[in-house]
Length: 161
Image (cartoon, rainbow, N blue to C red; front, side):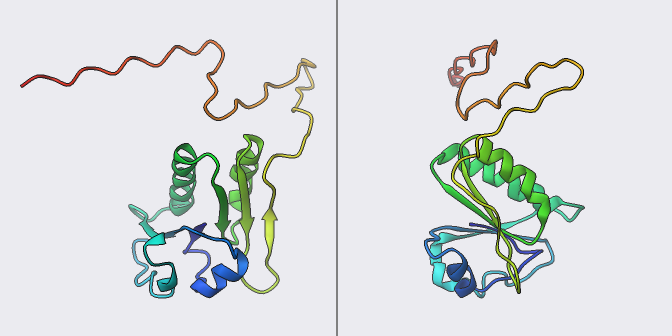
């Protein structure tokens, strides 16, 4: 679970009621937010605090998105839940679904609930350009080589002292 702490401030019991099988919590907070972990004690070492490097428009959102990509690269089978009332995450999560990742946006507070749900993207036709009539290329699968991409360079040997 990735929590946008600038947007929502759930207690650990709130998180567990929204996502009962939650294992890891990544809590993203602003530079001036203090004691963000005081209500997350039950997660123990399974909570990771991620302070953003500096304040700015959507700075925390970009940090959260970056870390989701980082986690996905290390654990492609992970189930991602973003806890926020910020609808700006929807396009990123829809893209993750399109790539085959499990991703959900969950709101918090009265009348809030899942926004984007599912383990895989729903089958839909690729976008079309009106002028050419050609189909847009489907997104590449995670880890799949791109057509025409150069192979990765070989690792360099360590310099000798």
